[in-house]
Image (cartoon, rainbow, N blue to C red):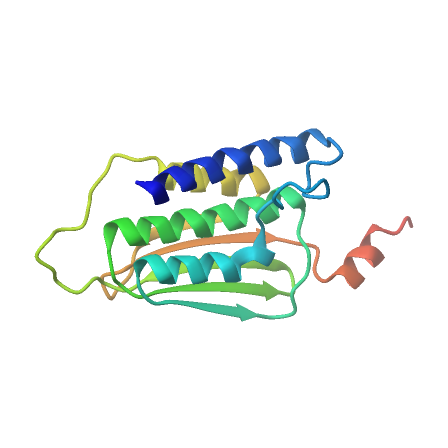
Length: 177
């Protein structure tokens, strides 16, 4: 119960920060002593916490890391967070893998969990809105979103955000002709 309460409080705090970022209010990006807005830079912590709570979680980062827009940064982080939460809920103890890829023209995030070992207690089933929320986040930032079972019997969630490429080419492309 304490963990659920802390997650609820953290979620509300983060929503307030995101609203502040969206409104462009100064001091709402973590610079005023408030908790920083979660983003891809915090995936290491998220994966570590998920591993402590639910079982082994591997984190793979590929390509040269670059910044994405603030809203995309938060949205991708939240997709990873919800995916790991769903894996913990629906396949407790099953290993999971988070892959963050920085490709020449996109940034992609994939969260895959392996099939859970048979247990005496079936995985929880809920009528939650996790997948709907993740799909909406992806649409908000212009990313493609897929989710579904894997061939091995696990589950995969993937979001791919098209980008203008690395910062150097982005600056070149944005220069007036």
